[in-house]
Amino acid sequence: MLRPVVPPVTSRSRYVRGGRGCRIVNLQQIFKMPALALIAVSAAAVIAAACGGGGSSVGGGGGTRCAQQYGGGGSSGSGTCTPSPTPAASAAAVGIDLTGETPQSTTSDGTVLGFFNGTKANTPNGSEVVVLTAATNVQFHNVDPTQPHTASFLGAYTGSYPTSFTNTNGPTASAAGVSISSPNFSAGNINPGAVSAVYNTGGAGVFVFGCAYHYLSNNMRTVIMVE
Image (cartoon, rainbow, N blue to C red):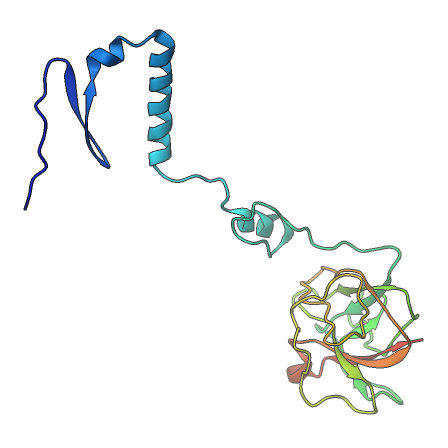
């Protein structure tokens, strides 16, 4: 194995070994420097030593801070947080809950479970067909104390419910402001006690909505009538 050649050390120089190799430092030249230059050299050495160990905290941990502050999300290293939506006074509220709820039979829209008008505080909330006014704002509220849910569009109601969950977005939220009857609309994952973004009810119609997590396992679904 070849050994590095070490230059001779004189009284005017010092052999300095660093993490990335060896170099000769001429002490005579350093001590002949003006005072300000010498201070600059010292400061640079301190900065280099600080940069050489550990790693910068800048640009990291953004996702962790977002998760702690807002309960999830946040891209790691972004350094920015996107707050969860807040209830909007100008939007009609649709409540979502599965814990403690039981299926309810309707006269013309089959059996519904987990969705209702408003944000009733008590369980059971009384799952029901949801009625909304056309071309107005709407927001979905998850009042379930333990489980996340989605409110996902599954097409027009034609007298029966789809046998499979056909929405390809599911837990991924649609952009705020879009119509709830647009193709593959979903309010996205809504954690317990949280609300969705504000959407638009769009045009009149009778639509099937379900939860991506509980549609197949619990028949968590409803009809939303937009009038």
